[in-house]
Image 1 (cartoon, rainbow, N blue to C red):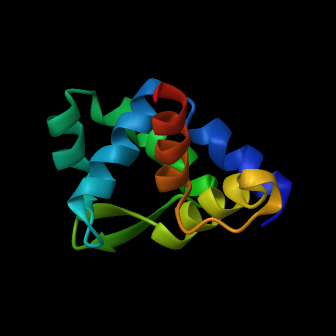
Image 2: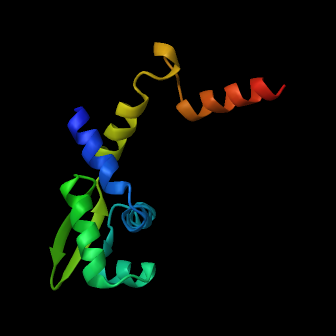
Length: 113
């Protein structure tokens, strides 16, 4: 992954409404949700949500598809996986980790004992 993509993706989710929309769509699964339903769930005006969703699509974190008169948005899981890999590729001083979370938990436990 290029640094340029990472910066664009991180900037896109660095907003409260976009992060909330992204997390809601992540929970919805691969089928995603129609924009109107997402706006209702989040309690945000459809026009405002549309702006935020466009930013996430432009950052390659979401995809949209037209189904009849509805626009469905869904998470591009491979993009988030690539972003997480980019952020953690040099973790643990270059030593291979099976899981960043497990490693961090182990370090926390060691410090408290």
